[in-house]
Length: 238
Length: 301
Image (cartoon, rainbow over all chains, first blue to last red; front, side):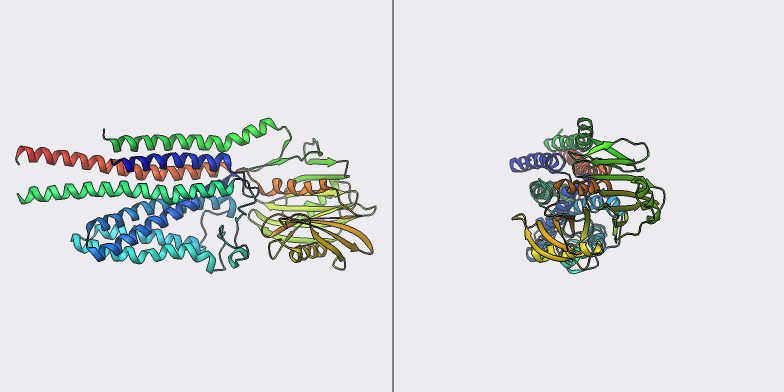
C-alpha cells in the first residue's frame, strides 16, 4: 500500500473516532429532540460524502469520454460504490431519526423521495454495468450514465429550498426560507453548545476523508482485478 | 496476511469497539446524570420513551403518588403535572384544576392549539378571583393527555407563542407579544414600550396596559418559530416564573430516544463494515487468483 494511502487511512480512522467523540460527548443535547439528534452529525455529512463520491463518478465519466483512459472509468465505478454506501447510511439514519421525531420511519416528502430515486439510479448504474459484455461499450455507457445521474444528487440537495411542501428541515439556510414553514425537526445551530464544532469536524471527515480514502482503496482493488484479467487473457492467448 | 488486510481488519475491529463505546457513552451520560442529581423526577414512563423533568433551583418537589407537584413559595407558584387517561382536553384540564382546588368548570380566558411531532398540543389560560391565574399546557399522545398546570397567586401568566418570523427585532417581539395578549383574551391591551434586553436580540421586555392597570412582559426566543412570554402585574416579573418553560420543554418534548441513536450508529458502522468486508473479501479472492495464475505461469501451462 502506498505510504500516502496508509497515512490517509490512519487519518480517516482517527478522524472518525474524534468525530464520534465530538458528536456523542462534546456537543450538547438538543433540548427538543434529545439524543437522537446526534445522528445528524453522521447523517448530513454522509450525504455530502455521497455527493463528493458521485461527483467523482461524473468527473471520471467526462474524462473517460475525452481521453478513453480506463483509469477514469475505474474512478467513476469507485465513486458509485462508495457514494452508494454513504447514501444508504444517510437514508437509513434519516429514517431512524424520523421515527421518534416525525413519528414515522418514512414519508414521501420531496427530499426523501428524491434521495430514494438517487440511490436507485446509482444502484441501476452498477446493475446495468454488469449487463454489458463488451468492455469498451460498458465503459462508454457507464460514463454517460454517471454524468447524467449526478442530476439526482443535485436535486436531492436543493429540493427543500425550492419546494415549500416539505417537512425536511433545512439546516444550513436563512431562517426565513419558505421550506421552514412546514419543516419539522429543525434546530438552531447556535442554540446548543458544541453543535458547530461537531458538525464542522464531522463534515470534514465524512464528506471528504472517508469518501476519498474509500475511493482510493476501491481503485486499487479494481486495478488488481484489471491486472488479473490481463494475465488471464495473456495466458489464454499463449 | 497483507498490509491491506491487516488495516481492514483493524478498521473493522475499531468500528465494533466504537459502536459499543458510542452506545455506552450515549446512555452513560444519562445514567451518570440521573445518579448525580436526585432532583430528576420521572413524571411518567412511556412504553418506548421515558420523559424526565429536571426540577429547577428554588422549586420544591412535593412527592405524590398520583400526580406531580412542584412549588415555589417565593413567587407563589405551583406546577401540577398529571397523566389523564383521556383525549378530551376539557376533562384533562378539569382534573388538573381540581388538584389545585380551582373551579373545574371554569371557562378559559384564552386558548391556543397546535400539532406537534408527538401529537396535538393545547394551551389554555384561566383567570380567577383574588389574582389567581392558571395556564394549562396539554400534550396528547397515545390516547392520553399529559397536563402541566401552572398556578400563580400573583396573576403571572406564562405562554408559548408561535411566531411567523424568528424573534430577532422589536417588530417581531411586538408581534409575538400581541399574539400572547390575544391568546390571553386581552386583545384591547396597549403595548406602552418594548426594548431588547440582549445584544443577541432574543430577549425583550415590555410594559403593557391591561384594563387600565400596568403589566410587565418578558419575551424570549425559544426556537425559530416560538417565543416564551411571561406577563405579570407591576413593574417587573420574577425571573423564577420563567422556570415553567424549562419544565414544559423537559416534560413534553425531550424524550429519552438514546436507543434510536444507538440503532443509527449500528446501521452506520454496520453498513460501512459490510462494505469494508466486501473490499477485503474481493481483495483476498483476487490475491488468491493472482497467486494461482503465477503458479500456472511458472509451471508453463
